[in-house]
Image 1: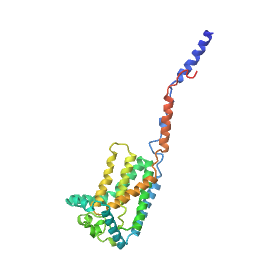
Image 2: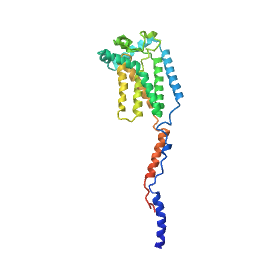
Image 3: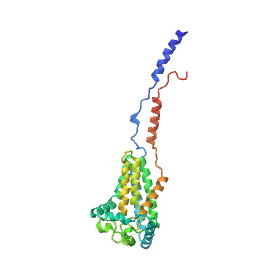
Image 4: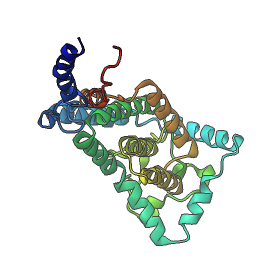
Length: 290
């Protein structure tokens, strides 16, 4: 009886050993590039972004011309800041005025960094992090739309135009400037659209977006961009502290409503593939359960 059972075991055991711990070959050629499945069509995105920009520019011009209301609101904001015991904008400007070069650099930063930095941010996300790009584009669109509504219903003269503030219009005094010398007749820009500050709101979104989309230990340094922007917009007397605070609040609301997609089609596939590989790599116990 024993002699008959031994050959049967000899026939079945090699078959079991051959299947133990053997993982199925991985099809690496079938894997798509990282985070490319969610990339939207380029032409559609270009038309969308340009369209949103044109709507915003036209809307800002429609909000222009409310000179009296803008200065009345400026007096209110100035009083609100003093009631809240916020630091005076003059403290930042006083530090800038110690150096003509520093003032010129601040004016240049205000005039040239705002749009290019935001466009570069969106282009990089589109190419490298498409899912993050869609999220960031939606957040920026919501914040910009809300800002346009604010400009329409709450025109506000910047502190450089408010006599009670006693501040210098550094753009006119030192250059460069993006605004005309006469705000009421400026055909290029609406100078009564100070609140909220999109300079600060966009800069803060750029920093948050890059921190979320990257994994470098140095990524937190991107916060220097909104910090420098804040000091520049206040020091050049183009914005009040409250302009930046309102912009940050609008951004916070937009981020709370528009959630970042944590998993794309590609990343979900890679997660499932890693789970399958882990199951395959677990050694099977020979004879378990017999």
